[in-house]
Figure 1 (cartoon, helix red, strand yellow):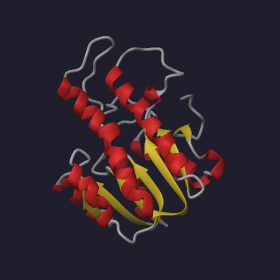
Figure 2 (cartoon, one colour):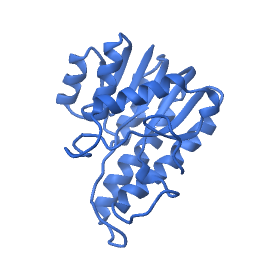
Figure 3 (spheres, helix red, strand yellow):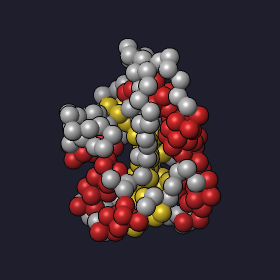
Length: 221
């Protein structure tokens, strides 16, 4: 099996690479900085430099992946950004960082993946239940929430565009012990990724366009 992980320098993305490599799968993964690229190479992955905030690098991704076909594609890159509650407005800089990374980034990368999807591929966008509008009860982190709601919309559109060729889902990975999730989080990256990998392996065409918990349970949009 061939796997592509976008945003794999650390945390959940790096754990996806580690687990798929441990199972002997061929993995291509991206990172922004040399240290992240080195970690990927140490795991035996093909490492590609990619900064989602750089339009030229995103446009060049298609060239780097030319001729490749992937069975599993993970769009993991994301940031939390300024922790502000509604109605406290973010600054322009704070807004641009979160929205450009979490929303514009996937919109820039997805066109490059169009010719890289193997028939029956599984494509997952790492989202968050904080992006759910139906489940929302708190105004906290409203910039991050807005970005993930928008990212869910991007994934839904991709599921329509790629329908019949790939199964596209948005994942809530759980509250994970990463730089973003913090040390008090409930899940280790190992357990969160193991759960999502199991779900990916069981996806069917009828699951296309779903928003799922890391254990496969549906989440309200």
